[in-house]
Image 1: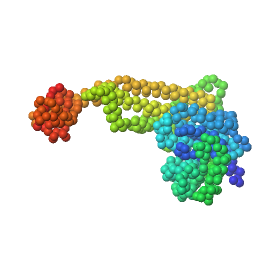
Image 2: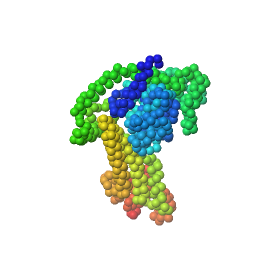
Image 3: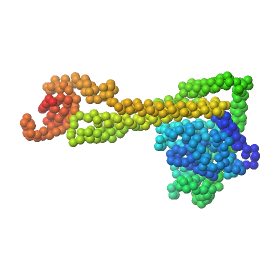
Image 4: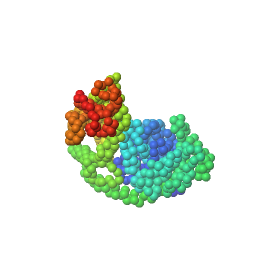
Length: 584
């Protein structure tokens, strides 16, 4: 760039990020960085790997990135990687870096495919990179995949907002060219926090996968949904290339040839591609850091004064005094417990006006997400009626029954109750994950004592996981209890007896009045078992031979009518002139 001082800005901020991350203070200073945002399979991972020239990010179906990855790229003569959680260890094998990312992700998120806002810090030194600080965030998704939590979309959006809402964060919005730009989730989120597009850089991937005869020229020329920092097009390796371990250097040459030979892009080939994107991000991040320096310096000085004040309290501290050490340990543990309780109960020292956290998120899970999941399992009425019909017929076999068999009723009810298992277990997972996220919001205050922080984190996380397992057992047991016995005498149960009593009470006066007006004796019970048309023949009392009659079969009598006018009459109205009735 010609200015050595400016070239050193990003490495300086990276060192600050690393130092403050070790001290547990990274979130309080809001260091300038670039957040990589995009939908699942938008090509974010490929863009980052192209920067490094190595495969080092986990891949697979569904959601793979489940924790933020703070990636610091530093120009160096040798090539290796370092993790903040593996202090002193240098990774020269990039496949080992990939495995470490997967293992560290699993350590925090567990096996339930959840996500966590706790970042993984990775520094990569290489002669092939330009100095950059990037945050790779989970891909935006609208539906859960596999065994992911049902509210995964909301969790991801909350996590992304925690980064991109900060003024010191540039937004790298990655969108595939073969989708509608107006519906890009990445650009929509960016617009929410950066309506003027001053912090947003657009990246268009998969240009080589567009339909024949179409192109993204209007987008790349910044004429469609313009951004102040514009758009840059890239061509990543295909899934086949990734599986086949195609060399990234060869892929970059193919990308260059694509832009130079494409009739719609060759006039802008010099401002397209991965190398140009990396150079542009380096320049823009450097400029962004320079512009942020005055405010950043003021904030840093404020933090320094606060820390100096806190340090004064420890001047008389004797680390070898057992009583003092015990007292400090108890105070730290008590403060952690109080902070955790405040976040859950909603009485924290400060009020977050940007994002939900702690108890507020759990409240939303209880009162919004869980009811929503229950509503989603409502069965199709037509399908349910068919299942009931098949159950009754299968139990009766060759016979024709009048009443609903208990076995058919229980089979249908139990099947519906069993549908509650999945949303209930998912609900427990969601609450458990939020408790762990809340723990990480509080545990940073133990950063001055790394071993205590690590052990506390392990103990509390283990306890939450154990209680989660017990809670799941209790939930499943409660459902099994409901499945074990159907209480038809319960006041909320609407069965044959309840319906009969309700019907008798509601129609007592109506039946009496109808009988008096038409001279027909009101039946003692009017619970209709079956009604319709039937043909009666070979019955001595019938004159004129066999013919169709409208019949009503109640609990105690069988009635039939020969006048056609009763075809549409209510079953409890006996206003026909010719009525026959037999007591059963």
